[in-house]
Image (tube, rainbow, N blue to C red; front, side, top):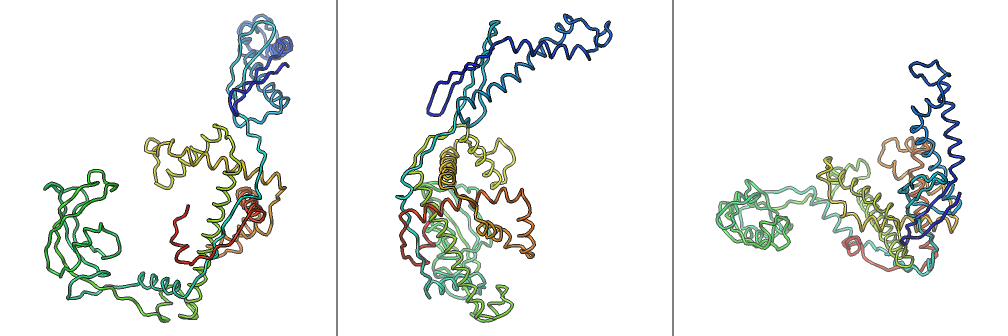
Length: 431
């Protein structure tokens, strides 16, 4: 077997393989003899069909089968011989048979050779989140608002009130879709309506009728309204004031705190805030590690893997959006950047795991399974069932060992703490 390889791109390889035709013809002859022993051809007894007739009837098919098998085996052997690591299946082109050799060309991408560097220089700023009394008060206020009721008041509307209205919007004198509502509640100051609309509802009484203009922003989701002014007419049914529940044991019970009353409820609130902050800290730190890893170790990625990931992301998006018709799927190109990043990070983290000889931590593995099963009533039984299910563990283990790789970078990189309040941290958009 004669093999030549040339690079036709950063990761693309073009491999030509030549094989002597003699051994292949011998395989064809042997296969035809075997076929001839069982072939049923009209006019001949089984096993007595002349070789010439067998070749005429089955020769082409048998030859194609043998060449296919030879091609597959020789491709695998050539890749191994040349120490290549294909990223996906090859594009095969066979050459015309010249009677002396069988030759084909395989074009494929290889996995990048990754030599990690500067892992110890990756900088991570770990948020040190402080939960103060004011943060807890804000959280309690949010929870009270969730249980708030509304009562009718006989006064002008003000910020924080709810105004129940009928409204009709017109653009150049014509009503437009979505521009009409009946008995529609608008909470002033909540930001559920455009600023001009809320301004028009401030200072009104029950029974009032009014008209005002509303300017739609240029980036408004409805293109026919973006950047335009519409005229609105409104009729006020009633003005309602928010009534917040008292902080007491009854309030705690409304959040399913069966024992311990308000004291237990306050403890639960604090624990939930701690948990919420910890989860965001982990996500924030992980994102910093990923960004640092990409910046310090830029790599070429195989287009084969990129396109596979693009299709995977598109499928995930379709599931989130409830789209089943492929023709209604978001454009595939929308996922190119995200797919490229995910593939690169996957390859880099895999190399970290190999280089640092990271093995799955059983304690972390069990902890991860416990997190997955936390929502079940029989959580302990579910944990044991998951841990004893090889198929489930094959899905969980890669997530755990990848997190261990991230942890290695955090522990060995340049990490420093940054104090930040709960409110500021939780209101910071995720990167």
